[in-house]
Length: 118
Image 1 (cartoon, rainbow, N blue to C red):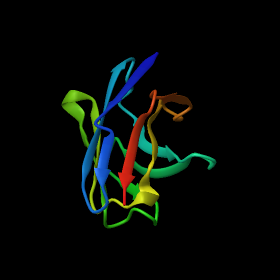
Image 2: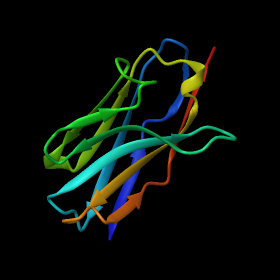
Image 3: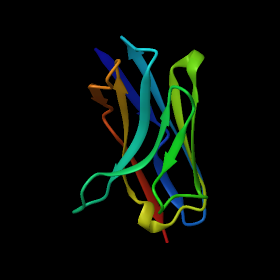
């Protein structure tokens, strides 16, 4: 079992910044892909960014150049630095982890609310 605990959400004005953290604990495999997803009211959950255990990153087009995903392997923590936030970024942000040789073990955090006011 893996536990993912997010923190760092909140209310920010448009143009502001927030940094989300996701602390992982439990049976963490060396091969993994960690990511952030978000779900706005009335919309489907969508990918924001991912980072592999090797450090390769991937971003949704809507956040490229504004958001940065990173990880501290020693602390089993993944971060999402969000800059130049807009009201369209308002959503519940979820941490996701895929673990195991085939990345078949899939875990989610409980989510953290990010609200961007105009």
